[in-house]
Length: 196
Image 1: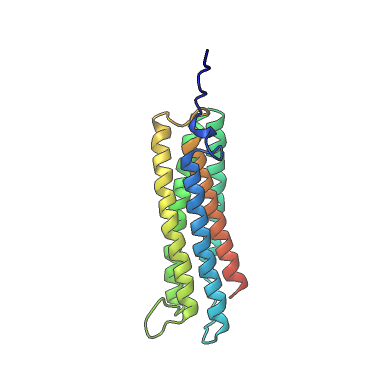
Image 2: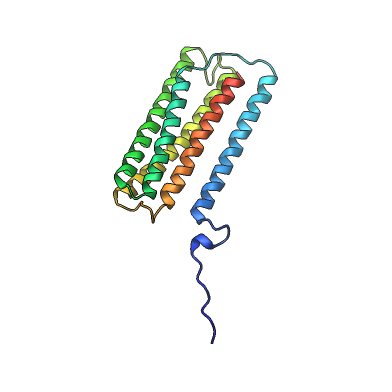
């Protein structure tokens, strides 16, 4: 008598991770490499001279607090999903979305503060120091928009009762990506403070 071959679930294949988690980790790795290149380029270009020093807008500190708070609310939503506290899950996701949108609005204000301080991205009055700050902030903002879209999809799933303790993949991936984006911004903010 031949025994039936054991059927493996998607989670047990390869690394023991779901393929969507593996893709997310590869995406995060590629984003890390991109920002490592940007920050390395910043240091190399600064040391070449013709580098204008300027104060970073105070609004960047407020934005950093907002992104840290959004990370806390995202973690609260994740823990709520694990405990099947669906009302708190939805509230946590909405709070995270609102804080993420507030962060983006704050970044827009920071762009205005940079211009008000005569720091431009391009043109005759631009300097590479300002251009780097705009690029770092802008590329991070783009990735944060992708995170907000991801959050909106998870919120829609939560509203349809598709996120709970037995269906954690989407919120788990969203939480990982959101914490990454928050940590990335805090790294960029500290990098700019220390290298400015």
